[in-house]
Length: 263
Image (cartoon, rainbow, N blue to C red; front, side):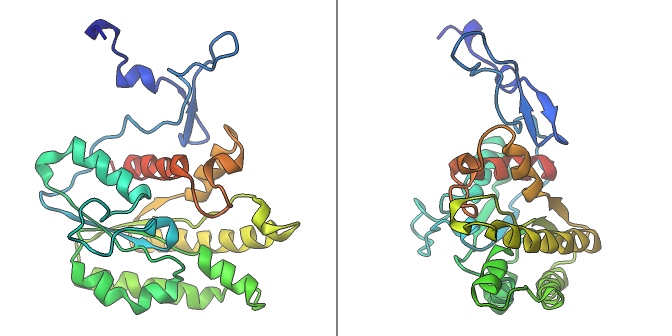
């Protein structure tokens, strides 16, 4: 393709911000075909994060973060899995090659916040991260509902979360922390009326994450709001196939917003 005809990054994401900048849209082309140049989700105009050379970025959470990262770390084909962690690492690896950043995925499928606390010394403190990113909470809600307990013990949940943040800050006073809200979207798995039970408790946990983000001066990613806004563009199933686990485009949405907030 001649150089003069190559689409620029700016042209590709040309759009107008919607709902606090989480999503953006262009004008659809005439006819039946959508305008592939200007319609899309924002996220390519971020500033590069200010990270010292050799910074270690650790991502913690449950299956949403995990996405089958390779437990054999000598296998560099699979060491990050295929979640938003992989996407963030790939983007920064291209944009900041001289920084020689190190990325660690220690998400563990099925984990609750108390289980994060149990493995925190090995899977967080001993890795000596410079940046710590945490997404947790939806399994706490699921287990409370399925067990008949009904309600996540909010005070205990917050205490466990504070314990891991305190331990991390004690180990590294300069640690940069990123906290992502838990999230859900309507899906058939929830059944009639059950989504409201999940969403109510997810919203309660989001409030706690917001408080923690302020108390620990953390970057706060409003993931639930981001996905709510995304459903104005496409159906919930386009982003999160079962209401909990994002599809590739859902992970890309998390990655883009993570990078924008970290810039």
